[in-house]
Image (cartoon, rainbow, N blue to C red):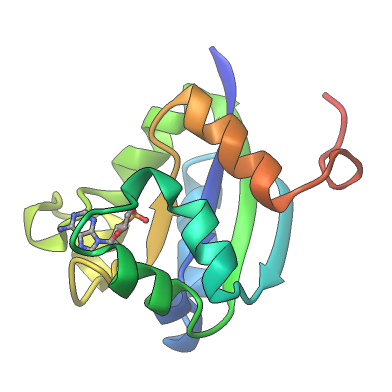
Length: 140
Ligand code: CMP
């Protein structure tokens, strides 16, 4: 099934010069980038993005981290791309991520895990619309 998902290269990925490495992996997996930009979230914007995690013990810390520097946000497109991209990323906790995944290879911490990907179609819609307006996403 053709889908879209939201990908973020997080501030640790950008500051550690991993943008090209992450994009190279998307290209090698034939996942198409439909839209892409670099942004720097405010604390408020990060809190809105991670609203589903409000109240969790890591909410303050992850929203500080996500607003600490620039990120690259992308809309990805492909067959079953939500699941396919999550496979490429590996588990949230890099220690549990499979060999060869982005997080296993590059993450340094459960929070500083280099990349984000939507976990469902509903969340993908919310997350894509959070960062991109209709003019920024090519019509299909
Ligand atoms: P992400 O997939 O972007 O979703 C929520 C983020 O919170 C997660 O990646 C991590 O960067 C961060 N985080 C920090 N601690 C935890 C935790 N214990 N469980 C899940 N996510 C965490």
